[in-house]
Structure formats: C-alpha cells, structure tokens
Image (spheres, rainbow, N blue to C red):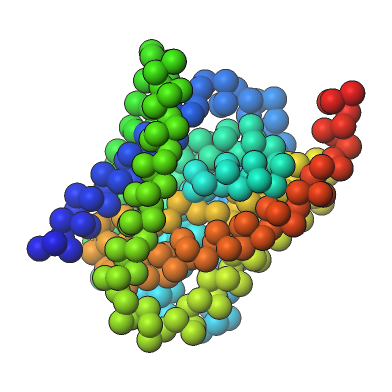
Length: 296
C-alpha cells in the first residue's frame, strides 16, 4: 500500500512541484531568446531529441541489455533536460540564458516526443502487450498535466506576483532538490535487491551513456561553430536528464518498478559526470572569444 501511495501520489506531486519551481524562474523573454538564437536551439533539439535516443538505443543493443532494463534506459533517454542542468551550466561558466531557454522548450517538446519513444521501446524490448498499456494519446495528456501545467502556473505566479515569486523561487528550488534526492533514494531502496544484483552491469553503462552524451552534445555544437559557452551548455543539456519524470513514467504510468532502476541509477551518476565536465570546462569557457567580444 505504501508503495502504491509513493507511485500514484508522491511521485507525480513531486514532479509537478519541481516543474512549478522551474516555472518560477522563467519569463516569456526566455522563450523569446530562442528566436534570437535559433541555431543553438536547433542543435540542442537535434542532440537531445534525436541523437540521445538513437545513441542510447545503439548502446543498449551493443551492451546486450534486454527487457525492463533496456526500456528503462530508453525512458531515461526520452526525458527532457533536468532543471539542475542550469546549475551545472553556471558552474561551467556556460550560457545560462540558453540553458534556461532550452530547458523550458525541452519540457514542452517532451510532451509529444516521449510517448513515441517509450511506446517504441516497449514494443521492441518488452513485446507489444506492454505497449497496449501505454497509449500515446493518454501518455501525452498525463505528461502535459505533470510538466506543462505546473510550468505555466509557475510562470503566471512569477508574472502576477514578481517580487514574492523571486523570493519563493529560492525556497522552492531547495525543496525541489530535496524532493529529487528523496525520490531517487526511495526508488533505489525499493528496488535495492534488483539494483545490487545488476549494479556491475547497469552502473558502467549509465556512466558510459552520460559521458558519451556530454561529448556528443559538446562536439556537435562545436562542429557547427557555436561559441564555447554554447557548446559546453549543449553538452550538459544533452546529458543531464529529468530523472524524476522517468521514475514517474516507469513506476506510476507503466507500473514497472524494474524499469525505474536504470533511471534512478543514472539520476545519481549523471551528476558525477556532469560536475567533472563542468569544472573541466571552466577554463575553456573563460577564454570564449564571443564572450570577450561582448565584454569589450
């Protein structure tokens, strides 16, 4: 019964609160900024919504993962950028404005893309019987309620009561961080035996996926001649996922706790890779010619 309450009530509520806290930090100008930086947005969309699922699928196949674990990693790959990517971008001295804008846009696009990827993964790795339980339309509606509505509500509060919202944002961000830690800890504890028995297989894969996508996002952006700050930012945006949403999809919508194990594990390990990447890139972004030109 307690497990049901966690999956059906606490997980969706926590995700909604996290997205509300993200909305408190957004303004219409964050979306308008995309119009002024369309190339960076398009590269980010390519990396996050096309290359990430494709690379994850290829790596899952190469590693020989099957069943619930394979689906779990594909669910993770289909999730939007996590809001903590903004903090990592700040640490890396990247383009924080781009990170905020892309996080917001990614949350909207995920409403349409995630159900498609998850349904494909279920059909391919778990058999068509599982896919019947996750109709695309119904999943889109549920994701919209948990992602879109809280973000819009947060933006409305920010617009209507700006000063209070700015003060509230700091508190909500801290609470959201605590909620995320508790959610991941609960998922790990609930599936500890399964995680323990498969840790030596899943952990290296999670680390490899994280490092691969940090580098893919960075080098794709660098190859199309985006600035150093934007390239580092898109590396982070491509690899840091909204693991909370992945846990909701696996445990609440699909009711498959085994699928939540890879998501929870990646949700922890991605910060190790993300922090190392962020600190390693600080000197690189500090020498960005584009930033120097703006400062001049």
